[in-house]
Length: 386
Image (cartoon, rainbow, N blue to C red; front, top):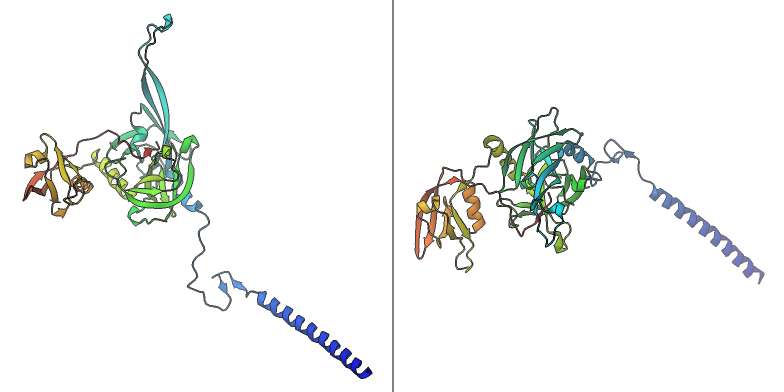
C-alpha cells in the first residue's frame, strides 16, 4: 500500500513537470512566430529578401496633390442680368401706382465657374452661365477680380470662351477623355452655391451619354461627384489633376435622383476652344435636312423629315421621305450619326449622299454651308447647373 502511494506521488510530480515544460515551449514558439523581420525602408521589403512584384501598390489615400495642381486654374464667374417681369393690373390701383410701367425690371445675379486653359488668359465655361448677362466678372483662386471679354460661344455644345488680361496665370493641364473608363476616380472643382471654391469626389459612372436632349453635340461623361448650382463651367479632373471634362448639368432633381451629373468631355472642349479662338465660332457643315429615326423599323436608316428652303439638300434634289444610307461613303444608321457626320465636315466641302427613294437607290452631291447659329436651349433634358 505504501509502495502504491509513493508511485502515484512520483507520477503526479513528473506529470506536473512535463506540463510546465510544454507550456514554456509553447510560449517561446508563439513569441518567435509573432516577430517580423526588420524592414528595409529604402525598398519596403524585409532585409535580405527580394521584393514581391505581385503585391499591388497601396491605394491612394489623398488627392490633395491633384487638387493643388488643378484648382488654381478654376475661376468663379459672377454675372448680372436684367430680368423683365410683367405686372398684371388689378381692378383697383392706388394713385401712386397709376403711372407705373406694366413691365418691371430687376437685376438678377448668378454664379458659375470656369477654367483657364492657356497662358493667354482664355477661359472656357458653359454658355448658359453667361447667356444674357449684362455684366461678367471673373474671380481667380488667388483673389484677383477682372472683367473678361467674350471671345465666342457655341450653343450646339453649350460652351463659351472668355479672355482676361492678367499676368502669371495658372493654366489647367488638359487630359484625354477618350481614355476614361467607368470606375475611374474623378474630382469636381467649382463654385457651388456661393461657397467659393469647393472640391467633391466621385467616379466615372458612364461615358458616351449622347441622347440627353441638352445640347446638339456632346457625348457626356456621367459622374456621381456632387455637382450643384454654381458648378457649371467648372472642372472635372482625374486623379492626376488633368482636366477631363467641363461640368454642365445634373439630372432633374424633381425626379428624386441623386448623384447623376454630366460633364462635356475635354476632347470635344479642346476642339471647340480652338475653333472659337481662331475663327470666333465653330465651323460646322450644314446640309439643311431634319432627319428622324425610322419609326416603322422597316429600315435601319434615318429618314428625311423636312428640308429647309434654299438649303444645299434642296439644291441637290433631296426630298422628304428619302432614306439616307451613306454620307461620303460611310454607312449611316441613326439620325445622330447623320447630324454628326455632316457637322464634322467643313463648310464649302462637297458631300456625296447615297439615299433610297422608294425602290430606287441614288447618289447626289451637295456643297455644304456653314451651320446656322442656334442660341436656343434644349428642353426636357437634364438641368443646367449654372
